Image (spheres, rainbow over the protein chains, first blue to last red):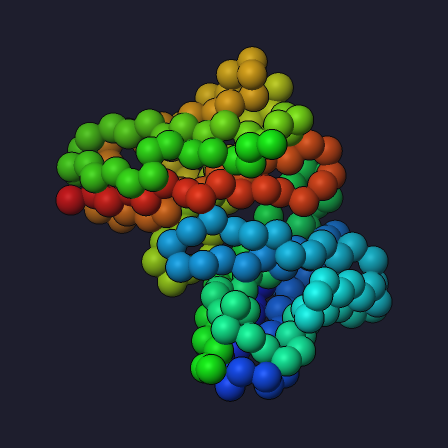
Length: 112
Length: 111
């Protein structure tokens, strides 16, 4: 979607390295979701951010939503092969009804 | 507790045919959304069902229709299939303003 841009499109990192994926919206977000997808499979929920400046962590993954609620970043610390997959950010622009507008995804490969 | 289940997992259809995909939401969820994901793209919102009514719709033609049953399960129907309808179809369920849980998807191939 043109409304939501992810970068980079793909990323290859060595195991143990840190990495960051960015998600930028052309308009103010009501909420921002991060999902992970294995090739051809369903989406696994990672985190939901709603408040400007909010930051959430789960295991080695941290996501932040900027104060203006138009940009989010996903940071993985000490990457592992299990982190490999496609990371998708999804935007809720209206609130309450769960229609999610997704970015095109970032394909992450972790080399042992 | 079963999550979101979709059937079938894979399907091959011929152009012009009709197809029905099925989705059972996560226990306790009452809202079902359908998404289409073309290869290399993010999922695109098709429509959402709540209380057996279509509540929201994305930018998809009328060939795409759906239904929600009293037990909250849902069907996605696509008529007059085109080659461009080949994609992974994902179902997501929610209740209120909570994160959406996704099924594993149905891979539709139109030949």
